[in-house]
Length: 371
Image (cartoon, rainbow, N blue to C red; front, side):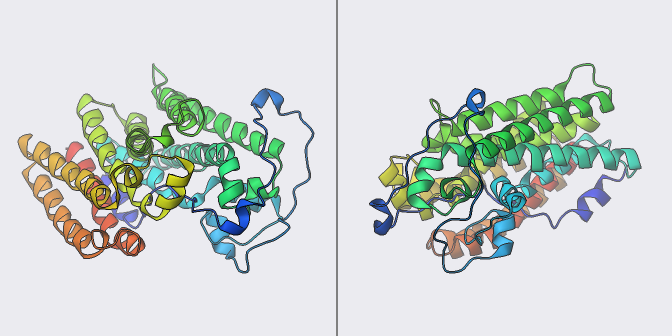
């Protein structure tokens, strides 16, 4: 078994929360709103297609690197493949890759063979570029009217990519992810297609998160927990099922970590309070106010870590429990140093300094469950 080598080789992976690209609409744009898109379902994808074009007016400056990662400050592009990549937001893929690695480690059955490495890479492609790309694209699709007000230069509201091309991308990414899930089940010799079922479940969760009538993202509690489950539990379950058995204790532990994921997702809500309030979105900072929401955020993360440490201690994994506790201490210190002082001003510093301790906490838990 070479689980520890696998994890050491990938410890640099970054745990990044989902990108939120909403901000209060500038007053100059409120009276110049583009014509709202009509709702186009997959069955209506044969509507007249428009040619991709660059926006009529672009921001003064933009970064090509940001454009490829799918984050704010992106350069305006007319290359359709760069625009397609931008919609999938590659910056959001690493958490899914990390989750697969943790699941593989927790199984205790990963070895540095060509076959195991190939399986893990295919599982990462399914979880990251395919299904996360599908999630991000469909989220932008259902936010297109909001983005037309707040950020009219994004690819969909600007017309840089046509409606039919967006719908095609959604279906291609979804079917590719489901197909890879089915392939992995056959490859692993599963009697029941558990990875395919996980892929279907994750895809449905992504759909109801973004699409009406449920649109879970409108509710701060439910929406953020759904994000936590998508970015922590589901890829972990897929990685573990690929190389071993998905056990009830792992389901409990990863569900707990999804509560921590809820806290991490809240971090990005603080800088969008004014826009969310104006658009009627009940993020936790809007619903409870900035002061209460920041304590909910850190409490969800820290209490989760401490609960998992207590669980590991109760099952005789004393050294792992102490290691997890040791990682939680600097995490709390950095929360007081940055996030609790000003969650808007110091959000980037906080995430860069404190989140790695959370990531390594996942690693410790995976190692503990593999023994």
